[in-house]
Length: 159
Length: 283
Image (cartoon, rainbow over all chains, first blue to last red; front, side, top):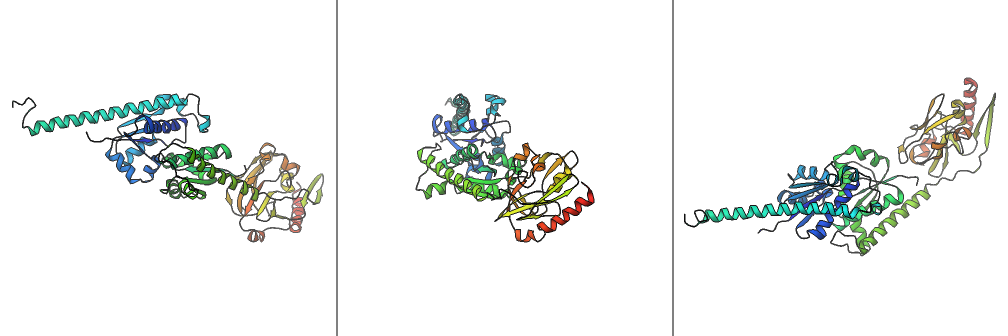
């Protein structure tokens, strides 16, 4: 199996709580839940012209994590690197009202913010697992196909 | 806080330094009530931040030497008031930033250093911009019927538009004369100029309004608005009570008073002019 890393592009999150939750959830996935399997793509750098970031998003599967339905992360990724493999919109998971509420400071995050972060982080993990599983399945099929071709017939061995 | 700030952090999420810029922006928001610009949203929606970035003192905070925030400010042609580079500050203070995104003890020290420097600078700037205005003024008075027109004698200059300026070093306080407040009668609204705006001599710097008319305040000097008389927002009638003392309009950091002065009137010149106006127009 080839080593597969999944890129995560998170919303930069200054406009609303959804943005902050998306950053925190992305960090939780990167640092704890799927450490080693994921790479962060810095959205401000990506938009500013970061070649490495753009190339990574072109070559590797990528998930956009957006705080609200403006979908800045998804739009930017698709503009510069092509279609993303999955999009997570925090507003869809937590509801528009929560996601769009104004963020004052990190100290004033709602009491249940960790729950919110977990909910979004789990959704990111679900998408990562699905992407990796699809890649593995595809690789397995390709391998079977190439084995079939090299033996000159089907897998029954009698052809 | 008299000056308004706006912060543009790089908000990076691939290095710890980027995460630190965001922490700093959030702390500044709390401490000096500044607005934060989202670097990503600014690129997709100019209109959301253009006015904010142009009308306030812009602090740009970069995490690393890629300087995404500085590049963005430059692309948008923004005038930068202060630039901070987190990695440079860390290096200067012999602090090694974590390779992880988490903000640990060392990173907190960097945040503290930067915040303290910015707040200290802000305090110094506010102090430097404090005008020394006389506690009592000596007036010359001209009476017409029941109306009294005062005019302060010392240290004041006037323009033809009935606005005054008092100069203290590189700072000036401006306002309107008694002639304006008597002409307008009861002033009900004060529409102030924007703090931080650069203005030329004879630019409009806000309006005052009574039941009779709206008066455009014409600045006698050029420079930058550093303070407005916020009390007038609640009590515009202070201008009627005394337009030279509690009814002052704004403080300005002067850019070229020597040139401005050539187009201004001294006390004697304006006093004569005011008397003629009063006599001719019968307020």
